Image 1 (cartoon, rainbow over the protein chains, first blue to last red):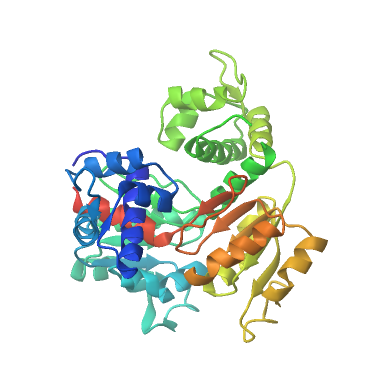
Image 2: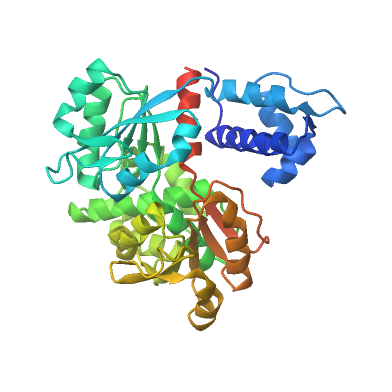
Length: 206
Length: 206
């Protein structure tokens, strides 16, 4: 696998969204300049991002919207569906399993787990909270592509260890800790306090 | 304001957390190597990140934990408290106002708004959902430092425009759209589908 910066992958996801918007508006071709304007970047950046993955578009003709959309979906691995399990049935965990936007994009939230007997058995969108002691058994029968960790900070590393031992190789981590995982495992961390601190940094350094 | 990459600011936030951990464990000095190991980066990166903001630490002596912690808090603007308003009282919005971790870090969630009469008046952690028509009046009396937008996609841009017109200059956006704002306004976007797509990209390109 060629090493592509995370920021590039993120822009590819955004380009895909913009292409869908353009398609809805009836556009069949699109210039790199228009994509750049929509995304707050430059034409050169758009061309560079897309050039990583081969040659798209023709000089002076722009990109074919439908074809580029399909190619971006393939690059991003969105030409199939993914099974996602959620560990932690607190407020964020329950919001995740109720969010329709994941399913629309091919991410099926197939199970949610918790250790708290008061939460086990609760049900959202037809999904009942399962006892986290069942995690290994469930993953053995029905492997997950992606696991979201939405536990308290002090439980997150142990859950990550169990997921990795059960064959999960991609983790979306919401717990406010830096997880230690083997190199083959990809972790994306969503830490809302860090996002707020990026804004307090801006406010403090104006 | 010197232009510092967002990725650097993010690492500074992480270093601050690690310093707090080291302090709890009773350490009074820490080497750049130890900070680097904890954060999955290199000593050179740690020294480079910290050098942006002046000279810390002494060669061969490492950094003084308490002093570096204070300095990082100052750099990140964490030596004061911030008033945060939330627009959108859906599942994520309500999870935000109930999350204790923000207050612990100096971010006070002081108001939450919605347009839906069924949501207005609901209360979480002593905070009642206010009618979003009150937004401008409230911000005039009690300016907010940061606003979180947690509305549906099609409402987000209009809310952003109203916030900016009311003097808000830093926005944390959870709506799955790219907001258009004046250059002086800082926006951080949290888009969970994009995070999942970064993982599907990894799975597809192994």
